[in-house]
Length: 125
Image 1 (cartoon, rainbow, N blue to C red):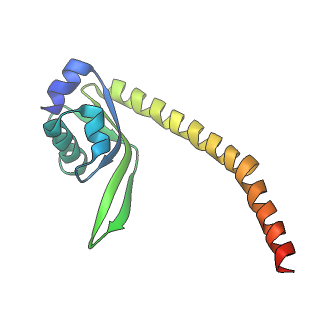
Image 2 (cartoon, rainbow, N blue to C red):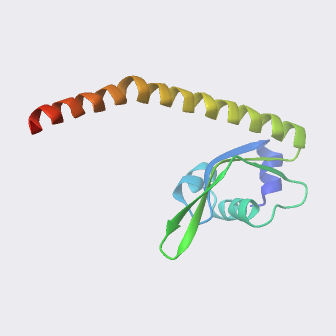
């Protein structure tokens, strides 16, 4: 399926964890192998005419002899202004989630680790 046609039918689209290789995660979101392939090609190779793509960030990680790429989320839109507003909303949500996770680590995980350190020191002698 063509990305432009998909966006015309479904409106501005947001896809999460877009990789440069075939992935079950993206396939679960779109449920069409040809659309999944065209999304990957649009993000990592060349965008189709008239489609605006907003990519959050691309992370690289080594896998065998090559580097794999993952984009946290990607917004596809036919209208640049609408796509940009959806992208900014997703960035805001991402910052809030990150802030909550930092709070959780600070309030729950760090005290637990400190207690383990104290217990380890007592046991060692």
